[in-house]
Length: 461
Image (cartoon, rainbow, N blue to C red; front, side, top):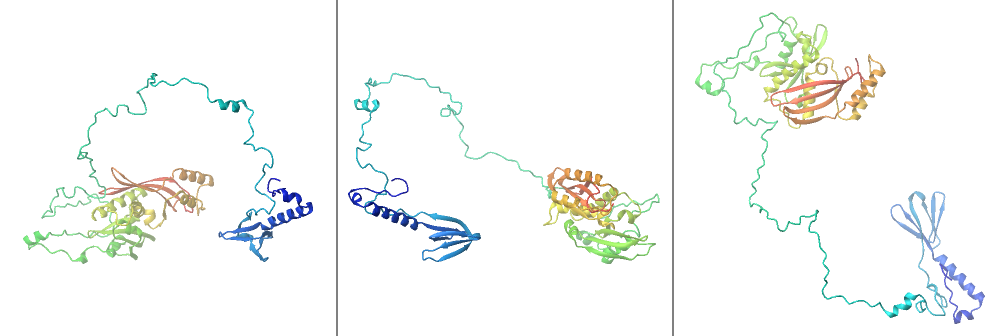
């Protein structure tokens, strides 16, 4: 017998065994082999549970242990079910499980081959001429190899110098510092103030409402004070401008101060610009107006808010933004130029600059200016329904496609003109998506804007 069944050796002892007894012994051996097989389950934590049998019943596995006890395991904790085949048992006397054997006759190795090739093998190989002591055969070889330098071993080369004489130039331009500050010649302060301030001789309304600006007397250097003891003393601090006196000058009506509120701006905008900012709110001709200003060397300087309405000029939005930007640059110049404070990145600095000079954001309108950093933010903004809008849904869909196609993430790069910052913002006033380009130079900050789309998001026209 071959295969998984045991082999029964019918030797001298097996021949004398009665058939009934032989078949009974064979059944006992097969039963013992089946009973010796074991089953096991592998739990999800790697633990292996071994028993005699495994049965699935519902949502549980029943494992019968060696002692006959049955243990239940939930199906969710069982990772794998294994049937472990035991080692083959030893053959009883008179049996052989090692496989088929030749009991009588010659073995396969002893059988003679009838093939002519095997029969002629005993004669050995055929006769051959002996090889010559010297091989007279000459085979030419090609010395040209396109994949390597065949003349590398014979070519003369320059030896490497002991000192590296290579010179690499370095850039002396730094956009964040004045590299010529130590070598630049400067004019010394004049003993006599030669500043000339022109006056308006045409009778137009002055750009600054109310009383005249407080005059600032320049400080006299210590060396000149020692030489000129007769120089007048500096005015007291009370004569200089304060946040409250600036607000009174802005909202004065017929020479009398109006009702107003003044507060110091301590938000992220003032912190990003690095200069003190103040906000005054008052009533002008029955309407609430705002003014954002700072104090520059003792003088009031309005840099944002309803500048065009307070001065009575009613300038367009772009002209008001240009006027506020020039005034803010003047204030920054007195603080050693547009220097970005520590811990503030260039994009946040540019957004603060744009938020102050835009009258729709810093003025009484109080529009929200939101920076768009990713396409998901843009989709979140335009997905909201407008509060009041004068265009149709078809036109708004065209605006959405235009805004999506023109989206670019905020970036800051160094150019010849300075640090250039480009970013997109959304305003709830008109639902406009605007691309800003802010150039932070060594002397001033310039800002230009381009309207990409409008009538988007939860806005009011």
